[in-house]
Length: 497
Image (cartoon, rainbow, N blue to C red; front, side, top):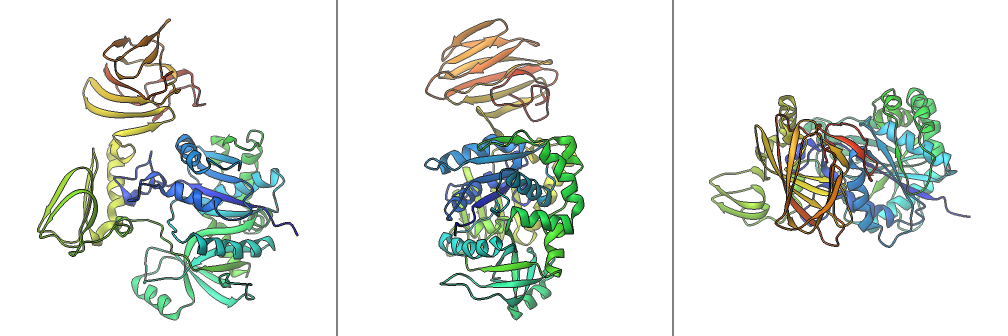
């Protein structure tokens, strides 16, 4: 019998506000570099592609994350011919709409019988062998029409996770595959005393947020338990461009706004568990959702005083403190149980007992309209990066790096002029009606209301210093006329350059 095709569905979104200032809205948790130098998204893709019988890779992410996601996969899939399809959301609507659209797309491609392996992009799992065994068990159950979720055996009374109560065991699996149980009910994040009870009785597991089911099965479950979600998702799927492997499918914003904002747990899994339709595969692998600085700290080794961290640190009479300091020396004297995260434009100092409140900092910054909730000082773009070096009323100075073969859009600005000085490489410049090369230690001036483009036709990175002058220097003062990356040719906040 031919095995059912496996389709990893990577859900990549969420701002990771509890990991500010490293995680920000424009560069969220899946793109954060971990202490080992890799990102959670890259690790998720490697894990997805390492399991057997993978037929295709589906990713649901925000439109603004597409190029960075594609770059991440490029390294992972260097030796893989697997097709990758990207469903690009204009804004987040939670997991139920994302999964519904992915299932509709799989069915339209003739893969209704294919098993969707739903994987959030911000989980950390080191034991690939145990994970693959759990997937094999889940896939077999899902291929028979069941809705399967992965439960993690609790190691401590955690109050930040949801739980699943396991009921009667399923028939034993062949070999060393993990056990499976009928899900009795999903439980919200419990208080400390209740979490201790769950740990003691032994038949509760952490809700990992990972699932396995065929496209047909989840669409049937949606039709019975959340018909409003499915009804609103169908026209969104029908409006997508013609499905093709390796494609980026942009979701219509107006249609998507009509889809209920709800998680797959609330929309389907809780109701389906009450009806006896959900099976829990109890994973024997390590698992973390890397949801706080406490979890990040645990990825580094502690010294004899319980201090951990990265970068240049000096600890005097310091205990139980984590310091992230990649760019400059951070010294601590006479402190205990702190988390200190230093970035070029923001510093976090928090007590370990209050790390869940870091997200409130993000809310306050957002209410103030401060850019540090959204952007780092260095911002990634499809063509490279830019770093804001200095900014004050009337001027802004940036360092711009353009990848070999890349180009910024043909654009103009209504309220600022720009002066470019090349410091490395050769810039091909369009300035009004002229097109010419600018070499190191040479410059060009771009007046207000002038069409212009910066391009790197060389084989080495191009670096320039840009000085902007004007009465308004916001990121939305841009009009695009041509862009090789398919970005909307109109003014859009956060889409500068």
